[in-house]
Image 1 (tube, rainbow over the protein chains, first blue to last red):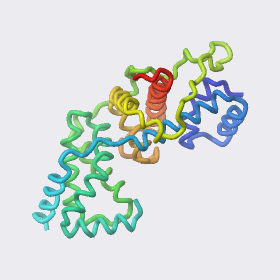
Image 2: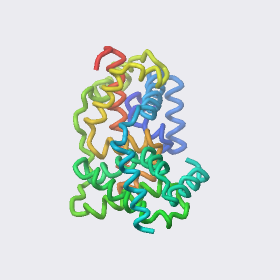
Image 3: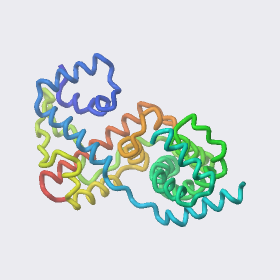
Image 4: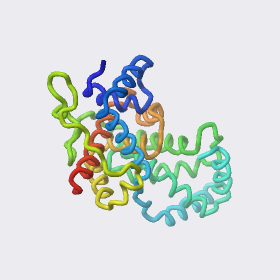
Length: 77
Length: 204
C-alpha cells in the first residue's frame, strides 16, 4: 500500500503515463481508499488545465516580424 | 495542428503572403521562445528566436512534412540555440529555487505513516475558466512561473501549455527523461501550492 507522501511523489508520473502497470495499480488502489489524495490528483489536473489556458504574453511586434520574414523569403528566392 | 492545416499554411508562406507569416509567428513564437529559454537562458533567448526565424524562412522550401510544422520549428530553434551558444551551455540544473508559496513538501505529511498531516485544501472552483476569472490569481501564477528556474519553467510550459510529449522535450533540450520528470514534478508542485494558497486565503 502506498503512503500519501509516496502518492504525491508519483503523481506527475501518474498523470504523464510514466508508471509501470504495477505502479499504476498501486496508485489506483491508494486513490480508491484515500479522499485527500483523490482531491490532490483532481486539483493537479485542474492546475494543468489552468496552465493550458493561461493567456500567453503577446508576441511583441508580430506584424513587423512577419513583414521582415516575408521580405527575407523574397530575397532568398 | 493537423497536417492539412500545416500544408495549407506552408503553401501561403511560400507565396510570401504576409498574413500567413503573422499567423505563423503568433502561433509558434512562444513555444520557440520556451525552447530557447531552456537552452540559453533569458539573456540570449530572443536573439536565438530571431536567428531561428531566419533559418526557418531560408529552409521553408525544404520542409517535407515528415514531422509536424511545430516539431520542425522547435527543432530548428533548439539547433540554433545549441549551435550559437554551445560554449555557454550550462549543465542541467535540477536545483530548486524558492517559490513564492513554497511547494507540497515533507511538512505536509506525518512523519510516521506518511499520511496527510495538512490535507489539500478544497478549491472553490472546479474549472480552469472559473479559476482564471480572478485576475489576481492570474498574476499570482505568472509570478510563480517567473520564480522557477529557466529550465524548470520551460519544461513546464512545453508540457502543459504546448502539449509536447516528454520524449519530445528530452530530444529538444537534450536532457534525460528522468531529469524532465523531476523538473516537471517540482514545477507542478510549486504551481499547485500557489493555487492552493490563493484559494485558501484569497490573496497572492
